[in-house]
Structures are given as C-alpha cells and as structure tokens.
Length: 296
Image (tube, rainbow, N blue to C red):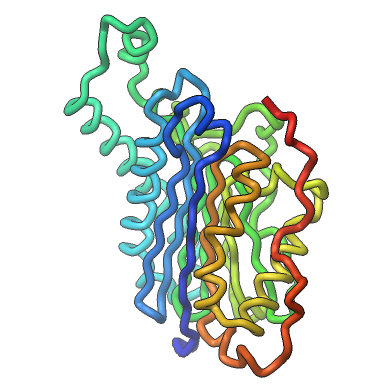
C-alpha cells in the first residue's frame, strides 16, 4: 500500500430549533483529527428522550472515545485483509472506553435520588447517556468505518458518484435506534473496510440523522450532497467548504428541528484546481428540504 495520499478533515455542528424551543442543550457531538497522512472523524447523536437526560454528555464522551481509540489503532491499517479485525477491535475498545468514562462521570456527578427520573437511572446508569456513534479513520489509502445507531456514512468518488459506506441497520424503524447504552451495543455494530484507490474516493462524509431527515428526497439526498461536496471542493477549494459548512447545517437544523452535525474526510488534493473553472453563483449546496415548518 502506498502512503502518499494526504487527507484533511472538516466538521461542524448546529443545534436544532426544537431543542432551542425546549431549552435543551446541543446533543450532537463531532470531533476530528489529522496529521495529513492519517485522519479520524467521529459524530455522535445523543438521544432526545427524557430518559436520556445526560445524552449531551454521552455523545461528547462517545466522540472522544472514538477518536482516542481510532488514533490508537490507525497505525495498524497496513493491509486490507487485516483491517476488518482492526475496526472490530477498535469498536470494542471504544464501547469499553465510553462505558468507563460514563461511570466516572456518574461517580463525580451522582444522580439526584430525590428526582424520580434520576433515581430510576441508578439501576441503569448508562441509559441517561444514550447516544449513537459513527466514526471513521483513514491511513494512506485504507479507510475503516464503524457505526452503532442511525446517521449516514457516504463515500464519494472523484467523479462525484456517492454510495453508502455501510449496510442499513435492520433495527432502525424511524422511531428507535441502536445505542451505546444498550446492554450489548456491539451486537448492532456495522463496519466497512474501503480501499480508497479501488473506490477512487475523493471524500467521505458522516452526518447525524438531523441532516437527512429534513430532506424531501429521503432516498437520494445523499447522492446530490456527495456530488455537490466534490464539485465545490474542486471548484472553490476545501478551505471555502470548511468556512461554509456551518451555514449549510443551519437550514436543516432550523427547519428539521433536530441537531445537525457533519464531519468530512477529504483527499487534500481535491481543491488543488480551485478557481480554474467558473462557478455558478446561483448554485446552492443543500438538496431540497422537506416541508417541516409545521413540525412541533
């Protein structure tokens, strides 16, 4: 495997309008790291249900655990044949790390036994911290992706052709999602190993479900998003995409109502030709949003 490919990371997160209305904190978390040749990204979506009243902390701890453990194993991504074992071992380490961090947080911040909701959590201290997790790491030309719960992981070729990085979770029904707080979260683990040369990967993006659920075209928005990200990266440059990303997330967070986060791992040379081709100033990034203005 060659080690010449360079990678960069971009990320942003926006609180949903429903959370603002209900005086809830941002329950998404996003964290990235890169040294140029290697990169890691993680997004986590804390559950909004009142039983998960510390999910903002749970998602933050999940993102930290994922980046820590992915960085620990990223040097082992040297061969596609062994990468599957690497990502599976990383997932187990992430879950263990997250559970340890949560228990430390509970010890330092005990539940209020006078509050019935918090008192009930004493029997299941992980539940209040419930969160999903989506994480990826790339080293040279080899990428691994892991996921527990909902959210979207999409890889995009140099020609702007997008595809799902992972199979669907059969447990997702639109109302419930797999979670790190489950008794056996690894039973819901989905993983992928991607040779970025074979797939001709220009970038991959990872987002919480607040981004996709606000779309009219629920089945194909990610294709248009992938195509536009590659086009904008090539024509305007990755620094411009990084600057614009927070504002791109504002609209789905406001109209869809849910927290919205995205992390992007992009090939660093994607924007090398930026400025050489004209850009249509009327083009927008986001596919059409769903008509959710009357959503409670």
